[in-house]
Every structure is written in C-alpha cells, then in structure tokens.
Length: 170
Image (cartoon, rainbow, N blue to C red; front, top):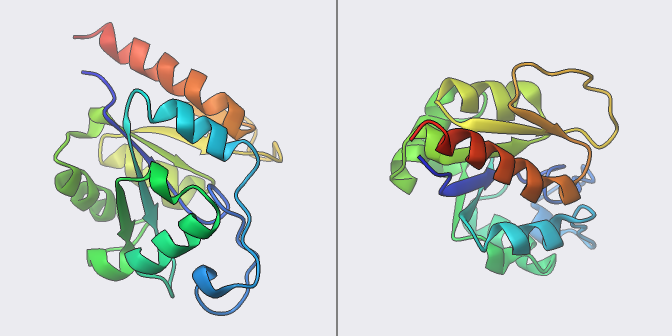
C-alpha cells in the first residue's frame, strides 16, 4: 500500500515557534525551518501534504495564514487544528479522525513531528508511519519512530524508503 499523505506538525517542525503571545499568523516575524520548502516541493510530487497542529490559539485559517506568510502554504491541501477536531495530540483519536477525514488507512500516511509523545506515539497508535524531526540530535535512538531525521533535507529520502518498505508487502 503506497504512502498517499504526509502529515506535518506545525510548530518547530515546519515553522519555528518563537513562543510569542497570540496566533503565529500575527507575529511580527515567521520563520520556516531550513530545508522545509525544498523538501515539501519534492514530496508534493509523489504524495499529498497536510498540517496537523495542537496550536492553542490558531484554527485552520490562522495556520494557513502563517504558512502563507512563510511561503509554504500552497504545498498543503489540508490543515487540521485541534481547536476544530474535537481531540488534541497526544490522543490517538486526533490522528484517527485525521485519517478518516483524509479517507485513508493508517499505513497510507506518514506523520512528521518534533515531539515523540505528541506527534510520533499517537500517530503510530493510529497505524501511521512516523518520522521524528530531531535537528539538535538530542533524541538518540528512537525505536518508536520509523525514522529519525536531523533535517528537512532528509525527508524525501526517508519517505521514499518507507514507501519502498511498504510496497514490498503489497
């Protein structure tokens, strides 16, 4: 079963969370993490992209506005906010609802995030493949994740590898 959707966490995965008050869309400055735009452009050739966020002050429209300010909004076909989902990470129900809305089974999706407990473990519990983004290298070995990436430049290759692994079992 091929990977159809890549679902990315937002804060400190796609864009830097400066911890300022209010929605990121209204912050004086926004910053896309290094390499993310190029990786997203490559990933979009083979799969669809979504954002899944727990941002307390941002609904999907505000998340989109911040993504657009960062120049990466056009890559994403769907944006999911815990404010609108009725569940929040780390509840696996968040990811099960997301999969239902994307109309895919867990193995057809990959979750990318920077937090093992919010982005990786619950996505895995929902049946998704997972990639932990660990740019500082502090996580060490993470057997709970399918892969660990030090940077966004690694994502296209890691996802292609996960897709190859999956296609062996068709």
